[in-house]
Image (tube, rainbow, N blue to C red; front, side):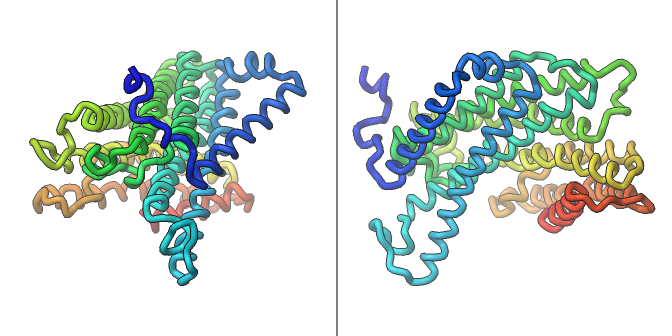
Length: 406
């Protein structure tokens, strides 16, 4: 019965190291402060009625922004700790807190590195993107609400559940995954990671990922079925097109993530051998599956951003977007080709020259629709009456940044 209720948690799972104690105390103080302020202002009923149970997409979008902003601070703290450890570790400063180099142990550093990657991708970038889509898309297409308001609320609270799970190890567990942000097998298996850290990683991503899939289905149906009279697909704003392409990718790849995490969980808890190094397991299958989700996820995030660039450039050049049809086809091309490039993350896996050549070519081909978008933005600015505002200059900076990095 104890194992059924507590699983692998025991007395050692309670906060006992400086970072778990500090994290638990910090979260407790923030919770107490929030409760005191809300109680003094007598806002509990208002919060419950107007926000926590709201199905208004604008309010849900704002809540996405708030939670993602909080997680940005949380992930930023991890980044500062990583930077500080690297600075101290390379400067021959004597370590402390039982560390040989810098101020973190090797295992603790890897936990922070893993948590930072998960937080920034799943709970910061995804939160801001979904918040923006919630707020803007219904306004752009003239929809009073989303196709399923309840599903939208459910998706948000599943996202919040993932946020809670990724931080719960401070109070219960004492450790997070020390496996890298994708928890590559067999390192994430029970043999090499027997603690509860990987379990927190699995369930934080699983819960938020299911919410993301539900939200993706909801946005697709909203855009396809709830546009205002007279607004055909080929009259939609570019941000809505970017959101539609992004959500189509979401419903394609996130079920794959759900299945992969489920198989890893079964390996860890029931002793199966999907991703192990023995008894017929295949660790490279995990690498394939996780990157089949992981690389398109980049484009899930960037396509709505491309839509923002198109809107901003057109607005502050004071002219319509150049070659609207080409821009839309560029969005569609990026989302289609993005599903065929994941193997370039591990060319050395031994798949053979033909397989490597195909994915190498596809990695170059995806630059074509991306270039269509970039040249469209340049053509839009050509002979335009450009206003040098912060949004416009930000778009100019982001575009070459993406091109050089990509």
